Image (tube, rainbow, N blue to C red; front, top):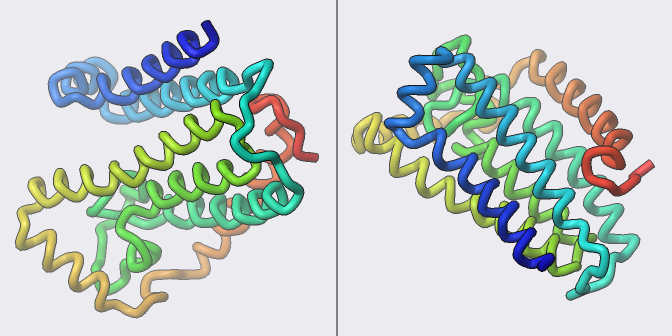
Length: 220
């Protein structure tokens, strides 16, 4: 029964992520809510379903594939600080190759910022979040949860590459990527990114203190 319930929650999570983004469904939702309304609504729905999925993984009688260890917990805590900083900086830079990032300015391949490091910084952050959480969560339910979410993030990189190549045109996509990779590793990173990094640390500390309430595990 527990397996069926968990599978049902997982199916609902996948449905709420995939159905609203289908072209015909998304077009109707954007027409009704506006682009900003759709983005906000989709983000809230995705977050809510993720929290439900995380809580559903807390089985009363977990099946451990490997036991939790102190080093794994500490490694996850340290790694998540870097992930939060990465997310915060990535949100401030425009990105023609993937989702997320600032829409307030045009992308300049000569000054790509964090996009120089990876063309899918948000998905890389999600994959890192999932991978780090696998370390201290060796029970079967959480291995399935974080393994699947990490796999979806990695698969999403390939799918978005195909979509953006089609939208931008293969030649433009390739040339833009080549110019981006040719830029200095720190080109486009500014003092504003230090501020974003600081906000990322603040978010990390907030998540540490709130973790007990949304994930059911106290970290402080």
